[in-house]
Length: 416
Length: 119
Image (tube, rainbow over all chains, first blue to last red; front, top):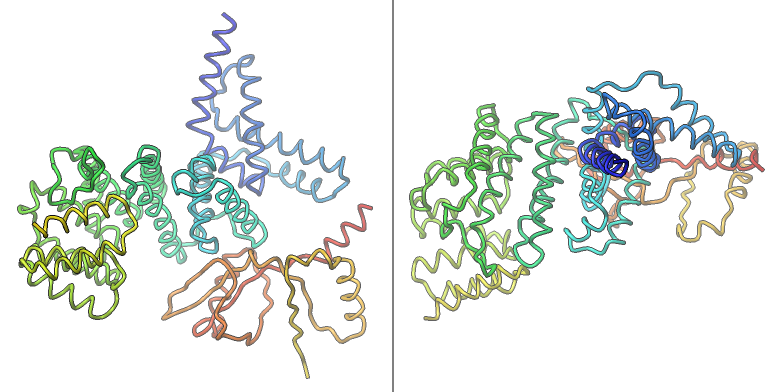
């Protein structure tokens, strides 16, 4: 009986840990002023819950209980250290925390999660550190899980996180949601981190795919949190874009792990639930003026998602969206994608002229997908020699195994 | 004439140089009237580089690394946090053509004073 009770209490505490620990942690960072003290306090709070809840019952508001338990544990700890190490700093710190009178309310707690996201994605941290810190502190992944997802050694990730935390402390990176005038640029930085995390999981398509797939899921969860806390059109656009890409996951690789391009995918295997959610988000975000790059990319993905086949796709609409994207985010890669869409609308010759013009500028001469796109257009025009040269160039530049196999297959088909 | 004396040091060798020596020298030179301002800096990992190009702010981790740019001046500012420091740094005119490295001050005098008190 007693054993059952303690087991079910452990399950309850575990459940609360899963659903609340990141929120409690975010608030403890604000209340206690630094990451490491907050982490220690978080563990102390859950240890206290395991001891006290079986006796006293689960509190009506576990989150508030945990925040206040963590805060008291931290104050105790600082006071103890002040006594033993005779350092005024600890005593002062303890009193300043103890001074902060009232318990934080629910709104504050949601703001704390947003504060944490913005602090972890601060542009004064290196991009690698932003990603590692966000996955560690916001998503609660372990250092080993992050290392695995990014094919990095765990000590490297651990060192990145330690360095980032010390920069936050020493350079005075604040724990705050940016002011309205800073918000657009700072949000860009957060969205870039989320998209980077997503792509890391999405582009992995063999061997390790199972665990790395989870990283894409983590990015989608992060974007959902952002949309919930800060429903900016670009945040919705990014969430939509990721859902629409994710919807094709099952269809984009064969059973043997080979890459299947969009036009050859079995569209019945696309996830209709994710597509519906993605399209709804695009519709919510897009009507606003001057759509940003994520909204436009999501809108393009939505047009694909709605098409029954590659041929029946509304290429006119897609080229139009690319025209806007070239304006919103001018880059040779966007121009290349636009050229491929033009080839679908007006035929391969029109597309090839655009691709050759981009390559002639030297902008993408080392970009494997530019050569792969050129090769494909030449193949469709039956210019076999040109196609072979471009496939070989793309092959020399690629580092991804499934991509290499795909290009080799195309080259072999040319020789037939 | 006023002169700026820039201090360069391999941070790995920081330990060979006790903070107490630096603070003692600082106290002397300030008393002598020669010194107008002096501070120690936090390690280079705490640096942030700010640039303004066509009205767009760019913020990156780390110190400036272009050897073709030379040190041209300095501002010592008081700001509540790094966000405010970046806002101020972005308005320094050379940020539009060069860059401004924002590095926090290391409270060396306070550290040495606290150490003296606790022993």
